[in-house]
Length: 142
Image 1 (spheres, rainbow, N blue to C red):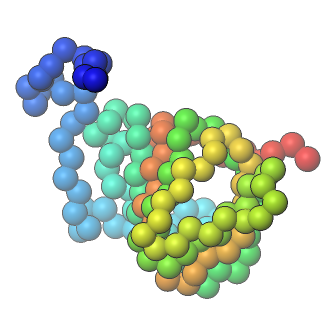
Image 2: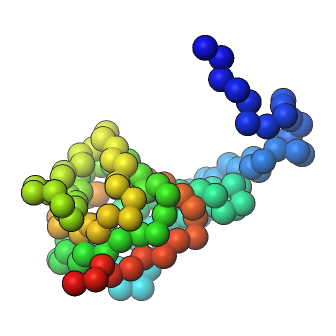
């Protein structure tokens, strides 16, 4: 079976849907987000390259895990976490037991489902992929 092309191609570099993007560590320093004192993030430049369709960020622990994130959900079409080092544990509304994602493993989180980060290693490093790049995070009704 042959897949159908979604656009007329092949395209020239100037006509590509997404831009060429090469990001090096020195180009994107780690930053801390408000309210998240134990982790920091580095935007990998994919949101600009895909015109807002995809966000990729490199996340790492910088202090011991001191508290759960609390139940929340994201308004996105996909939320994927690939663990490079260490582990992270998620609880999902409707699931009896938390799920632990270890180094070398990947999880596609159920979109729109409330979840809570209930644990992580002190050496956690992960790549997060979010679709779309701009999205909201909300508290579930209780």
